[in-house]
Length: 144
Image (cartoon, rainbow, N blue to C red; front, side):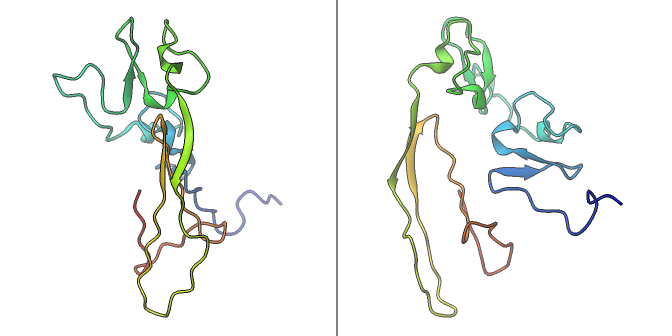
């Protein structure tokens, strides 16, 4: 017998989203022009370019060629622009305001955690609860 279809399927990691076919793909790969899900669901409902924009909101512009590349290709240590402009000006993520390490709220108390990070490109903050997925409940809400 095979273990592949046993038990409850694990949820996607906090830095991933669930594809329509049930697979998980990195959030960075959404709307990058590549079929990362295998069913193209990661390329659905993507932001659209305004007439005045050179590139779509989820894209970066190459300096000399003015071509558009997926924003996730910026600062990935691989030149995607002919002039390597997608690798210039990169700054690693730096946490400016870290969240509190631990807190003991009273039952029913509202707790708000804040984390501020800067870098180029803009860092993505992934929240975890005791190093596991944050459960989906009506009493728990998180935003990025």
